[in-house]
Length: 175
Image (tube, rainbow, N blue to C red; front, side):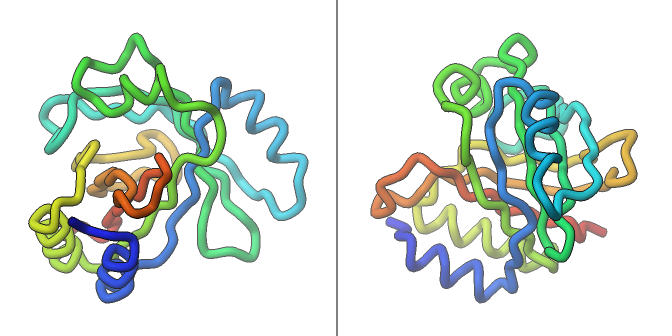
């Protein structure tokens, strides 16, 4: 079974960098109004994030509202996530999360810079028993300056971690 130390080592070996910190919220507009009052908060882009059946590798189709907030002087962003329970099909991690996850810190997302390394990493994690909650491939941030093709996977915290936090592993360098 995959442990926290093994996950850390595998992410580091694949050249992972932190892409964002994910925060679950009930109301993105209210959360954004609050967060933008703090120093170093930069531009923010809100959008609906939808993946249909054609995009899903693990999970089920869903639509959530997201906001990416650039942090000045940093190489990462803050992501706000607001689920739409009525726009999420049964079988999606987001359906369960919309009903059970409390607002607050949700995940750290790591970007793997090379798509081949990303696919190898995911294959190795599956072999070692990592629990994939969601896995999608498609265009994100549609209609914003951040629109791009990517692939992402939500992985449950290793059993030795003792938390319900998620690790998101993504690749924004898909050719």
